[in-house]
Amino acid sequence: MMPNRPLRTAPVLLLSCVLALHPLQAQRERLVVRLDGFAGTALSAPAGTRVPADATQRGIFVSDAHRLLRDDGNTMILVGAQYRGMQVTLPSRLSDSPTNATTLHVVTADLWLLRTLNDRHTLITVLRPGVYGDLDDVGAQLRVEGAVFVDRILSPKATVGVGLSYASSFGRVLPIPVVHVVARPRRQILVDALLPARADVWWLPRKGLDIGFNAALSGAQYGLADANQVVPGSNALWLANATAGPQVRWAPIGGKVQFTADAGLTVLRRLRYARNGDELADLDPGNVPYARVGVQWLF
Image 1 (cartoon, rainbow, N blue to C red):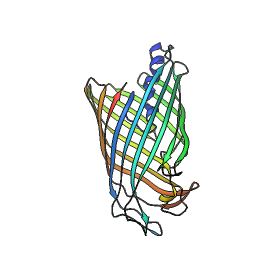
Image 2: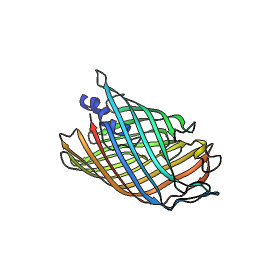
Image 3: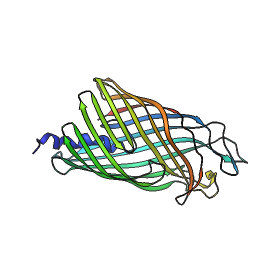
Image 4: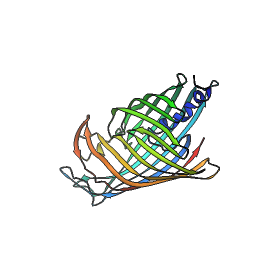
C-alpha cells in the first residue's frame, strides 16, 4: 500500500489535465488572460465569393476557476467559466467588401469533478455547457462538451491515464480518445501532456522560471447566423489550429502571478464551412507563425 500523501495529492496533480481541455498550460490556474495572433495567409475562394489578400486570426482567452475540497481530501470540485473570442478574416460575397472580419465566440460554464478511487486511480469528469458561434441572431450553437477518464499513478514520478472526450478541438464535434501523461524523470524536467489536445515539456532551471516546448491543438465548431453564411446554406464554421514552438513562464513576485509567452509555427489548420455536419467548402489556410502572451493568477 502506498502512503496517504499520494492519495491526497493526486487531484492536485491532475488539475493540469482538466484545465488543459481548452488548452491551458499550467497547474492550479484561477484567473487566466491570454492574447494570441496568427500571421496572414491566403485562403481558397468558394464559388461566388472573393477573398481578402491577407486573411488573419487573432483572439483573446479568459478563464476563471475556483476550487472546492472535501474534508477527506479525496474529492476535488472546481467551478468556473471561460470566454474565448476569435476574430477571423473570411471570404465575402461579391457584392460585399472583400474584407469580412467575423468575431466568433465561445462562452462556457465549467464543472470539474476529480475523485480518487484508491491509492493509485483517480476519476476525472469534465462538463462544459456553452455557446459557440458569432452570437448574431440565432447563429450560435448550444451544446455540452466534456470528458471522462481515469488516471493511474505508476510511480512517484509518473502518472498515466486514458479516457474519452466529446469536444470540438479538431474544429468539429467528435468523440476523441485521450491519453494523459504527467512525468518528472528528473528534478528539473516535467512532461505534462493530454493528447491530442496538448503536450508540454518543461525545464525548470530555478524557482519562478519555466522554459519549455509546447505542441497544442485548439479549435471549435461555431454556429453562424444567416447574414454571415458566405457559402449559401452553411450553418457552421469548423476552425482549428495545431501549433508547436518554445514557451516560457515567469513568476517575478512570489510565484502567484505568472507571465507567459510562446511562439512558433502552425503545423495543421482547418477553416471550413459546413451544413448539418457535412463539409461545403474548404478555405485551406496555409501554415503561418503565431505568438501568444498572457498572465495568470494561480491558486
